[in-house]
Length: 341
Image 1 (cartoon, rainbow, N blue to C red):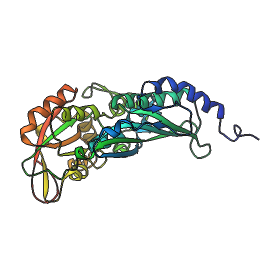
Image 2: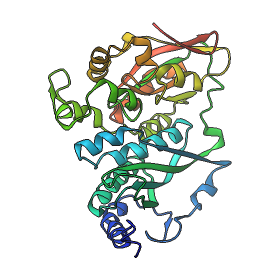
Image 3: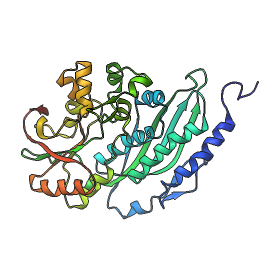
Image 4: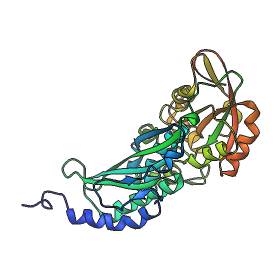
């Protein structure tokens, strides 16, 4: 008896690392010390010393049950973008710049080419967010997970000068809410998505005129990463007073998280076009509107609060970053929460 006969192939692990090295190279920053394969990832903090009061920010998350779609469709090159996005968007939401990322892949059996493809998506997400991929782990779990299944999670660290932290404490009545468009469902609510649509290859390969693509393509679209967009707004001289990453819990849970007590957000549902995938989901699953806005991003991946005088500059900066952005509402005095009208 040996480890391979027990279900863990060490040689496959070595091959996975070799295959992924070319993707990892794309993410390197000058602060990274050493290479892939050490017991830990090393990252120089020399640049951080230039800040007045540096604050480290961290985020950890996974892709939820969206990985099930990737497995059904046998498409594994974008799910890593989702893993990165869910972590770095949270860091950017607090005003931080992501520094580095680590991934964790649990699988029933290590198929090196598949693992490397997953990591290629992780690397792409890191490139999009200017984060270095400095380490990770691929763990085989024979007997715990089916051989062809896997799960993916990650962890990111970022930094921000304390004076630039986005806390929401300075939001006041009359401030403007700007919504930044999403790429689709992102990585939240897939337990409900999988109840609405039949999760078979045939179903996911079905083309829908209203989507302009197959159902699987629409659902698997990777989460948009907003790091560079928010940086553009900051570099335009705009102070972002509050920022909400619209993830699980939708509008009703996430928007209030950026508000101080005594402030209520008012969002105009007609201020932008809700993407077709959400309309199709609501219709197919007979889901009430309130539940849709309480589960999904409904086409807005981020909502930021700014001073009304900065409205034009914010929209211009976001457009320059390649984002779709809309004035979606305002804040007023009232019980902390959100009103959709």
